[in-house]
Image 1: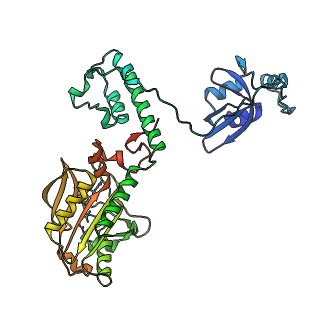
Image 2: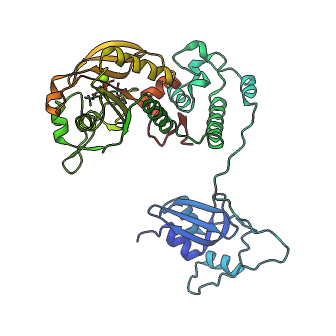
Image 3: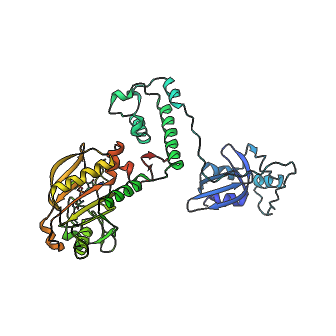
Length: 405
Ligand code: ATP
Ligand code: 9VF
Ligand code: MG
């Protein structure tokens, strides 16, 4: 016969046994898809898997407890029932309220901000020194994950590793720092860095005369084909297809083309527009590639659409963001020649001076300039992150700080 699960055992016995074999009365039990949350008469609670073979299940079946929780005020009758497993007579749950004035224990369910000791750094320094070679690869990985550039721990740079404390000490210190960093954000700006960058970019470009657009993330196949991308075979733009006939956009250009064509009939020349939004590409793993990333693409069509103006706007854009860059000539399938804006080895942007032949298909007949930047790469450059993931849509990092503790 199949063994009863925790839910059944707790409901039947009316008691719970905590890990150190202390017997508690059960006030309430909530069952979810996989877990059980048990609230004890003393106010403590436990969340465990709703299993049949766990130590907790065994403890409830075998009735071997070491102590009884005093605060639960379990009646002899309830204990007896648990031990003898005589469930025929239901027991009334009568918890007597003592008149000794003891306070009711209530568990806080709001997250509290734990104050972090200030002078841990000194503590770390006085510990025994550990050399880099004493760190295993998994220790290094863990340290890299929970550290930020400001910690100055770089396992590829030996000079920064002198006086490294033992792993456990360093790990504890870094965890405390990250908690403190996130608490600081909670106390001050409360801004997500990706969202803040988008707002900053939007404000900057609007002040430079560009009009903001928000278009759909879902685009039809026609837009890809018209950009010269075959969604089935293209090697550079590996696109995601939805269950219907739509695709997740790998770029913003198709919609911007349509806007340029329409606005040219409405707005004075030159037409200056931009969009900031999520784009999707099926990429292989790399420290500069995400499958879900944020692009800003700004463009100007008509008067002043020349290489000089393009470089001027890019220069003031990156100066505004405080990011250094170099330029490189490149070419791509979609536009032919591009100017790549680089930060070290990382491409921040591809910039193009039109016109290009496919303009005809989009109904465009004026010169244009444009550039597309990845926001997560801008964050990586700005903060010295090792990986674009730090600044991306993620549950593991908040504003570059590891948070999965
Ligand atoms: P790369 O050659 O580095 O893969 P790309 O030339 O394919 O990039 P573009 O099509 O020029 O990229 O897109 C414009 C900008 O968008 C890039 O310069 C980059 O900043 C950003 N970007 C493109 N693909 C990604 C991605 N997978 N993850 C993060 N950012 C990206
Ligand atoms: C440069 C990057 C074709 C006139 C609407 C504007 C541009 C940006 C290139 C982007 C892409 N192009 N990921 O075009 O600004 O489209 O490959 Si328009
Ligand atoms: Mg490019």
